[in-house]
Image 1 (spheres, rainbow, N blue to C red):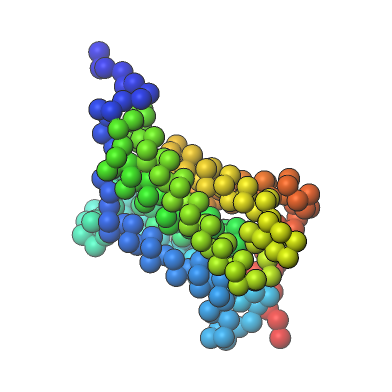
Image 2 (image 1 turned 30 degrees about the vertical axis):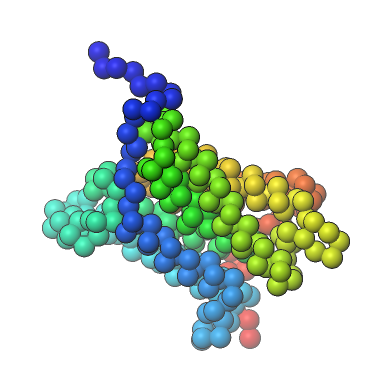
Length: 261
């Protein structure tokens, strides 16, 4: 009979080694949240939507998601496409992604959904959780992880990931607070410390890494679940602490397609 793994075990190996190429791809993805915040597509777009950069990111990432799904369909049914796919992007894949959906599909879908339907600051912070919290957990866990769980992930990695996610979100909110950007998510304003936003950030970073802990490869991997679930958690906490109507937190699809003259 196979030996049962203990919940805490220093001998358990981490599931995957730290993949520098993959994490670099996530860092390149910072272009999206910061491009979104600074609305860089507004002045160059031939169309003007209610929020042009938001709408264009939604449609671009949505289109890429569909294209990725087509590629996945082809490679799992035709050996030529699978061989070509592995030759081109193999070094960036997790081991199991050779036979399962690769993480770029849920990653693009997550960007599409959080940018398209959630408040700007919430969407950006949730993507920063993924960009910095996830690789920090992998790096800390790979270097210092001695207390390991049933799935190979470590207590040190999870705590490190929570810290990395919190710091990334904090830096973003600190910048917009110092710049006195008009936002309901500032860390302080003329009335003092906005404690509800500190709590929202803390809860979001914890939820993000708890989600990372239980996520698996495939369509519902952490590239999708971290931004989506941490965004919903932050919206829920902020709504409860500020007594804001829930409808104020969500964009409708009509907002994304509405052209303005």
